[in-house]
Length: 300
Ligand SMILES: [Zn+2]
Image 1 (cartoon, rainbow, N blue to C red):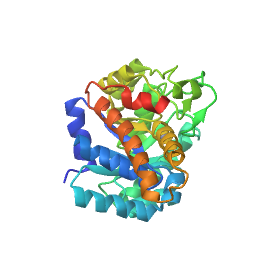
Image 2 (image 1 turned 90 degrees about the vertical axis):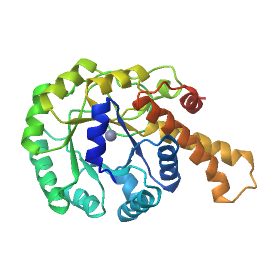
Image 3 (image 1 turned 180 degrees about the vertical axis):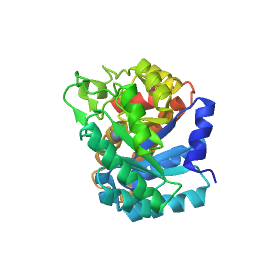
Image 4 (image 1 turned 90 degrees about the horizontal axis):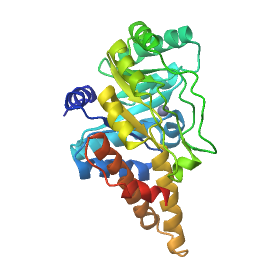
């Protein structure tokens, strides 16, 4: 069985990206696993602190482990946006393959110091664990925002990226390169797209020399994903697009028959709807031509 590190090395060589999809419950997890199964592509399952709290940290770790063993699929687990030493160590102990350490709201020096401490602590639990650190402002909340955020003040500079990687010992850097968490309403409606600072990605890649993660991928122009991967992005996070598909399909499913009370009958179409979005993103990150249907369905 390949490790996450093996998969990242292989995909980088192929010039493709790894999809990271957040889950808050079993319905979403089933959708991501089904997409990995249908495409044969590796996936990185993510859960933020809030998602982990709802799911159960150890329960999510155990479930992903059992799914990986049963299916033989390359399914990995990331503790997304972890803001404390305690929660990072908790995830490492629960068998997570990687931890996204996020002290990006702190001043640079403080971010360096805290991130370094957490990286050392989780590698003491599991030397093979992959540590991600974050520099710059990519906003908070994978939600629908009323308007697109116009000001990108705190973008990561190549010099910051190099210093941060050298000082903290992280394996993966999450930079701010025009990406932003959540989607503006205009993006959900399909009227607007996010655009990335592709030249900055390339400069950061050269300066930092590590794998790069793109957070807040939902609503990004397809062509920018392809170019971002070519410029050095290795992992792409998609959350809001899944949440929008989850809610819409759940509402549709509930509306279909007001007498239906069997949870697995109500939730099966939800798994399918979220799976289609995951598949379309996986194919895109893998460099395949993608029909927009699955994602257009999200916007309908
Ligand atoms: Zn994120």
